[in-house]
Image (cartoon, rainbow, N blue to C red; front, side, top):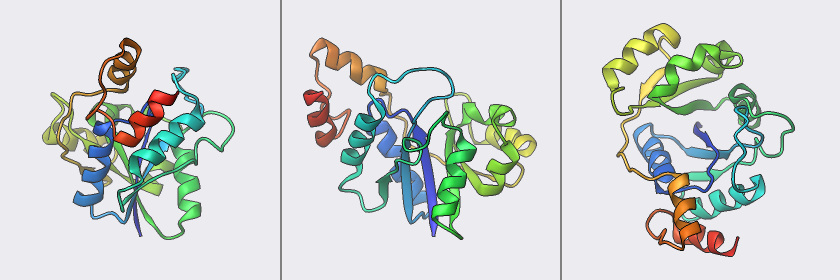
Length: 191
């Protein structure tokens, strides 16, 4: 089994998240992509929505896609949400599975400062998405230093939408249609 992991606050989940997940599922020929809402963030940023609400929104967002699933692995765990712990939990739940952890290119140079970076690379390959000035050649150069032989470049369509944009529009009474799925919009309107 080939599993991709896309973590984030998903505060709320929007079409940009879903495009990334779907592209990974398709381009990397994954059996499943797990969208993993952060439980307790390590960077001290407190999400606008509680963890269980963000999980419910992710579940609603992916309910009709055969290759995408929500995972509560970080929400049910006590303490900070470290990538290495998430990967250990997913690997234990899926013995023998090949794992890909998705990240933006801007995060790749920071990998050596993460908790247990060598263990992260042992557990999973990295699916790295180009960002602005950080294209495929730049990724290959950085990968040679921080994750040799463990990086796949994941080209995805770029959509300029953010969770912040969605929250601001909701606060102003503005439209969020087409920025989130209809199921997520319905949940947001009730919260």
